[in-house]
Amino acid sequence: MLCQRCNKNTATVNYVQVTNGKRFECNLCAACYADLYDGFTAKADSGLVAGFFGPKKVRAKACPVCGTTYADYERTGLLGCTSCYDVFKEDLIPSIRQIQGKVQHVGKVGKNNDELGLYRQLKALQEQLEAALSGKRFIEAGRLNKRIDEIKKILKGGESNG
Picture 1: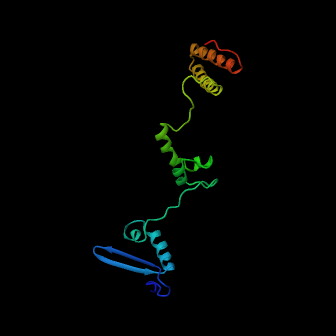
Picture 2: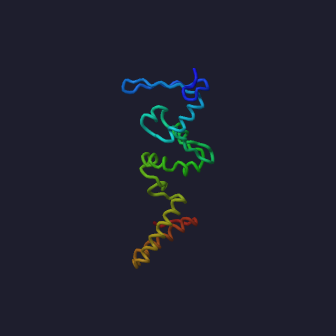
């Protein structure tokens, strides 16, 4: 059977659609099908024309460094490299927020007396000290300064009294 569009090549695609009881049948060659498919989907995203040729294929976003796609992450639960976090950020944020309740990592909460925790406490206390001094709250600044000195002693290998 010849293509109904060009009447030159052998028809390889047979499409049948029934709308309101009326039957529409079309036999096309691969070249005409590709020509019509590209032309119609570029002009129409919904309705009869989009239904005629099926859903538009969306190209999956992939990491330019490792080639991991978001579909790979959904299937395995693993990202390929650190760049994936930047590439898929918009897709990952809702999942992370749903699982962890927040999206910023703060480490362990509470009495975190390991070295990293002490550095975090030191930084927070120094920020509080600056705020107290700029607000002329000198008694609070003295208390904060004393705690800063205790943490610095601990970090240098000394013991804490409090």
